[in-house]
Length: 149
Length: 124
Image 1 (tube, one colour):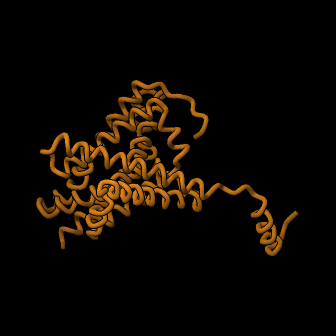
Image 2 (cartoon, rainbow over the protein chains, first blue to last red):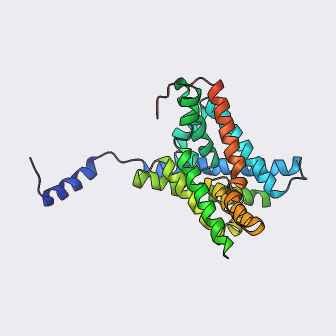
Image 3 (tube, rainbow over the protein chains, first blue to last red):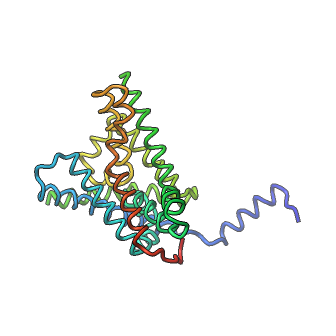
C-alpha cells in the first residue's frame, strides 16, 4: 500500500503518540549531574595541587590536573567502571576531558585482539581522531590569523 | 562559604555544558565524536575571541574540564606562539599547549590496552 503525502503526514502524527519516547528529562538531569560532578572533581584536584605544590604556575597546574583526570579515567576504563558511568551519564561522561580519554582507552582495549600495531595503535583514534585533527587544524588557523593582528 | 559558591558555579556551568551536549544527542542523533568536535571548536572560538578567560574566571573547572578547555588550550598556545615565535610558533604553539592531554591520553590508552583484558560489553 502506498500512501499519498497527506496520508503520510497523518500517519506520522499518529505514530508520534504511540512510539516510545526517549526519556528526555531524565537523560538531561543525569548528564547535568554527571558532568557537574566530573567538573567539581577537576576543580578539587586543581585546588589540592595548588596546596601541595604552591610553586606551580597556573598553567602548569592546569596541565597536571588534565594529566591526573586522564590517568584516573584510564584506570576506571581499564576496570570497566567508566562504561557504567557512560551508561548513566550520557553526554555528561562524553564532553569532559575524561570522555575524550575514555574514547581513546576504550578503543585501544577493544581492538587488542587484532594485535598491537594494527589493533591497538591504528584503532586508538577512531573517535578521538576527528577531535585531534579538527582541534590542531583550528589552532593553526587561529595562530595564522593572529600573525596578522 | 566562598568555596561552596565556587563549586556550585563549577557544577552548574559544567553540568550545563553537558546538558547542551545531551540535547544534541537526544534531538539530532549525533555520535560522540561529532559532539566532542563541536564543543572543542566552541572552545577554540571562545578563546580566539578572548571571551574564554572571562568565563574561566567565574566558572573555573566548569569550563576547563569539558573539552572546551582543551580547545581553548590549543587556541591559547597558537596565539602565544604567533606573538612570540612568528610563523613557527603559530603552527607549533597549539599542539604544544595541548600536548599534556594528548600525550597523557595516548600513553595511558596504550598501557591499559596492553595490561587490561577487554570485557565483552552488554551495552554499546
